Each structure stands twice: as structure tokens, then as C-alpha cells.
Image 1: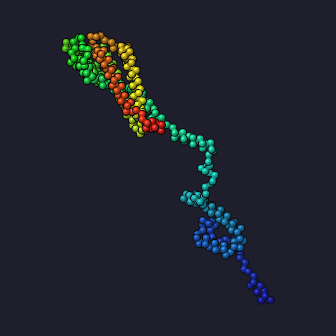
Image 2: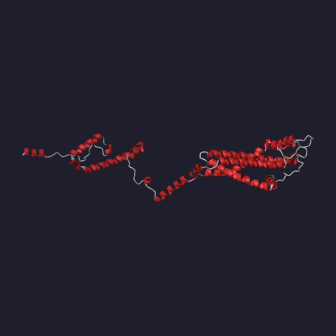
Image 3: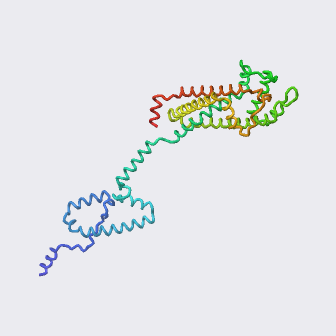
Length: 346
């Protein structure tokens, strides 16, 4: 009897008392080494039934390991920012994030239209500069012509030209040129009224009366302000050139427009002067010398040095010089086919 019992005990299979079904393999694939992957694939091929029977405990164990691993990652991320960044690297981006959401079609069309309008919009600054050039060029050319006339050289040409009226009170041509040069120089320097007030004739009498000196001081203020305005206009045109030089033909178009305006303006003033010189001359002085101290007698020095014919010749020379320069600018800045194409592209 004892032998049979012992044989039965020998025939019974050994029972595995380890119910944890735990293995030494990592819970996640990304934690497995090449040796683990090779071993798991071999074990899966040799024991399919065992894997099927132990799937439920393994899944439970994997979930617990994942939870524990996640808690470890959270703790480590709090302690180590670098480990948090490595953990975030394994997270896949959500397909419904705000960056991946497309705005409505109406919004897309509106933004597209705005971009196209901005691309086709013409810059305002070049247009404004060209308009200002057209307005300021007549004044710059007129001031430059006035500066050329207000020189002793022009006095010399006037006094020695045939047909210029002489002085009926005894001034010779040399006297006129000497005294007239003092008056012209006074307009361009920074001297006070004594520059003219202290001048005396050979007889010992004052060359200019107090009224004449006062009027010349007023003329000097106007002339100096005019020269200062001319310098500012010259600076403006230099700056305009520096701004517009990168745009082909833009500076030339501004000069062309200004020359047209200058030509029309000078021709209009010339017509007014021809139709009534006395009225034109009087209105000119009333604009700049409203105090009315510009009327003198024929025996006064200013009238003897600068008679009416002198002012007529001065106006003619200023007008001719201005028209000549504006005509040259029109010729050289005349719009061509290429410049017209550049204007359309702007």
C-alpha cells in the first residue's frame, strides 16, 4: 500500500505557488533593451498558451507599473526640470490644438484681401515729396535769380549798357557804381544802419537820408529772410533726392512737375507786369513794405542810383533766368516711355 501511494505522489505535477506572475521584463516597450525584445519574442513563440492564460494578470501588473512609473516621473519632473522635458518629449501633440485649427473661410478671405491690398498699395511719402517739389521749385528758382541780380556785377552791366538813363543831378557812372555797390553789399551782409548812414558825398552832406536808410533796412530784412528760405528749400531738395533716388525717375518727375508750375507762374506774372508795370510794381512793394516808406523824390540818392529802368531790367532778367532754367529742367526731365512704365509700377 505504501508503494502505490508513493507512486501516486510521484505522478502529480508540481504546483507553482508564485501567483504574482511577475517577470523581469520592463512594463513598456521603450524601456526594453534589445536582449529583452529578443527574449520576449522567443518566449512568445515557444509558449503561446501561457501568454494567453496570463494576459489578464499581466495587463493589471502593467497598469500598476505604469501608474507607479507615472508617479515617479511626476516626482522626478518636480525635482528635475530636465527629466520633465524628457518626459514631455514622449507625449504626442493633440490633433485638436489651437495651432492646428483652421480659421473660418471668411476670415481667411479677409486676411488674404488685406495682404493683397497692402502689397498693391502705393507708398505715400514719395507722392508727398513730389507734390512739395512742384510747389517749392518756383520759389527756389526765383530766389536764385534774385540772388544773381543783387550783385555788383549786375550793376556794372546796367550802368554800362547802351540806353541806360543817366543821372540828371550829377552822378557819374563811377559814382553810381561806387555808391550802388555799397547799397547792394548792405543787403547781403550783417552790418547795421551805419553802413549806409555814415556815407557822405564829396560836399560833406549825407549820401542817404534817414528815410532811405530805414527803407534799405526793411529791404535787407526781407532779402535775408528770402535767402534763408532759399537755403532751406535747397536742403529740402537735397533730402528729396536722397529719399527718391532709389525709386527710378521719381526725383525727375518731381522736378518736371515743378518746372511746369514755374513756367506757368512766371508767364502769368510777366503778363501782369506787361499789362500794367506801375500797378505791378506798386502792389509788389505794398505786399512786402506795408508801412509805406518806399516812396521817394527824384532827387533822392536811391532813385538816382536805381531808376525805374533798373527795376524793369531786373524783373526781365529774373524772369528770363527762371524760364531758362525751368525750360532746361523740362527738357531733361521729360517723361519717357520707360519712366511711364516705372510710374505705373509704383
